[in-house]
Amino acid sequence: MQKDPAHPEPLRPLDCADAVLEVMPAVMDALRAAMRQQVGDPLSVPQFRCLSFIARHPGSSVSTVAAFLGVTLPTASAMVDRLAKAGAVAPSVAAADRRRTELHATESGLAQVRQIQGGARDEFARALATCSPQELQQLHAGLGVLRRAFPPA
Image 1 (cartoon, rainbow, N blue to C red):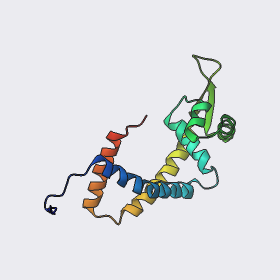
Image 2 (image 1 turned 135 degrees about the vertical axis):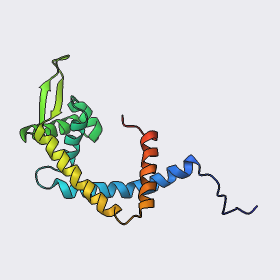
Image 3 (image 1 turned 180 degrees about the horizontal axis):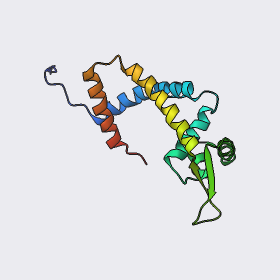
Image 4 (image 1 turned 60 degrees about the vertical axis):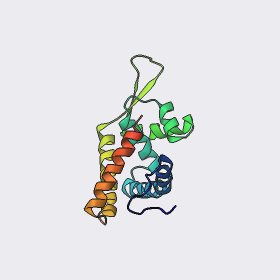
């Protein structure tokens, strides 16, 4: 039986999963490159990832930072200590459990995150400037689908 080009078969979730898995590594590579370009001297990329996580998850612990980064507890602790010494993170004793330290980004740390993310956003906008308005609309709609399918934790 011949396929009718006027009535293509509907896409299956597996087809879309394959397409996402195909394109995401290139998108993540571009994101990492844009972040590296913006981070510069004050922070390493891992330190930025740590600071960004703490900014998005105020009150998190060193162990949750370690789990997010995929590093050992001593590595995460050293990274948090460097960020605290630089004035980007403020550790404090948790009120509910005095054995637990909570981490919060300082105003200076939040400003660094905003500056780096803004620069990376500008890099992405330059890359997307080659797209037509229709392609941008389709991309935006597709990202909405991904947001619904994969809500933030």
